[in-house]
Image (cartoon, rainbow, N blue to C red):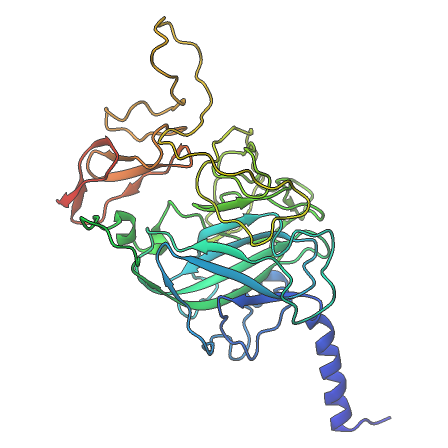
Length: 400
């Protein structure tokens, strides 16, 4: 039996439309290659990683994505098959045509309820806009310039999949005006690919790390901005052993309360800029304060109570009380525990910190910051610059 060319073409179009109506893609930011972008997951074994490689993958969208530092941007979606939600990340690379060797750094994570907080799927509509809309910001530590942004999604229900859409963005200086003009954010002087304070993008289900169905995973390191809903930290390797226990120091969002989180997992170096778990990791849970600003979806998830109004700002976040001291004076409030001393000896601080937003300059050659109640990893000063040693509310920079 022979079929006409037109019949074969029509049949192929129908078959192509079946998976297309069963998934999601990114509506905003405006993605690369809109005419060829499909809404299915990436293929196994990184075959079309990153950005769903295809002819025309990096064709520019009709509308530009221009993001001012610190301004709210909208992450929105098209489609209805949200697969019970899941966990998403927003990452950046300086490569305008990313490859498998590109380095991706996370600026925002959504742990649970992404792209929607529902038990199954939304009413069938391949062009539907009923999924949640999330807000995120380009942090001040990102230098103005041209970047590729990636939205990645690990679904909660259904086949173990990994979704990734990419978009070209232009980052501009903050629109806010200050007097006097603040010093340049020192981390913005460091090439993005070498930023240790920003985690690598987490990749699963198209490699050796397979997430369990029915849970919203916790990322090994969610980065500087994290919206947390519900779920458990689960990642199972193909051999049946446990993958990394995910965690991080920031939490918040729809659950409206503090949640325990695990310390950051070590990152294997088997691929630059992409966190590909290669060995089991475990860590005990630890309490972490959650008063850092977080993004909130446009509609509160239905499975969790509404978040309470935020308390008045305070320079001292809530922190676990330290063991009782020998001093009998009750006049000084207890300070959060820290395993790194007070920094006066020029050593790196670690653990909890009490002055949110404060800086610690280490011997003039590197620095760290109190963020979300925890000291960040130390970051080297840009070549030719130095900072004034010690802990202070401002990081004072001078030419070396």
